[in-house]
Length: 363
Image 1 (tube, rainbow, N blue to C red):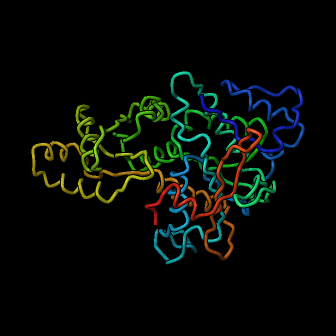
Image 2 (cartoon, rainbow, N blue to C red; image 1 turned 135 degrees about the vertical axis):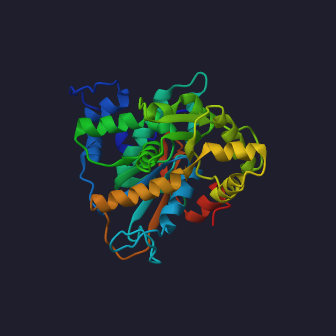
Image 3 (tube, rainbow, N blue to C red; image 1 turned 135 degrees about the horizontal axis):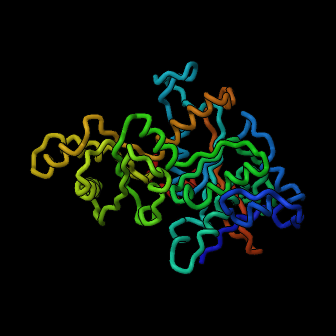
């Protein structure tokens, strides 16, 4: 079983035994330990998060790397009035991103295996939040000295849909019990809200096997009679177009029209997918005709990277959380690593290392 503890130096301190209120749904013991703490850990949660804080991206290293690139290069809106109009300036100009590459715990599907505990995955989500709110990292990759300064996070963005089900309730409970204020975003809720706002009623999700088996998307949608959602994992295929067709074949069995396809992946290339959809619309084969009749007129595709970037931009404008600094977006990368004492700490790493290690094809 994989450990899920990200150790921050302060967490080694003793915790008090002060009684804390209990939430209606059981949370993990770690949350209560933090709520009852008198050593300074709780203050990280309670600390006011201002506009000058960082935007933390937490999750699987490859997903975080792709998402940080999307944030850094996004230009879809006018930076003055927010209209959907490119202005040749990054939409997140002046913002600082804190990319927490959870190398130690990823891939999170390991926590769902036989003999493993999902409580460990829930702990990983809480510890990721503490690491983001803390103002120190343990050390740089080229320096053995402890504790480098870093910004505290004003927004938490979790990249894994698994942590929607295993961990984010605990982060939310921690904030509620301490009175802490920090927006927390995840791809599942963000995409479902966007799809419903766009008028989609019948949804298909293209997801990894572990996500499908955990029924993450179905649980997040809940009981909404006006909406349908089914999750599909395509068979092994080298060509992404063939994987798309496999998903559509699985959905075709439902007999329902398809308004939206949600791709639960950060590395899926949408260009060939859109090209295949265009080909299907021509109805050249019997299968294409069946697919074409199934796809609604306003059929849409959603992916987590764009959805999270769009939602974060809207949140910054709504809550007036932009830094309003004149600068290019800045990204600092931190990797979770085990030190000589068996503790898991944050280590600052460079962008070239991240690119070469996790997303060599990203440019």
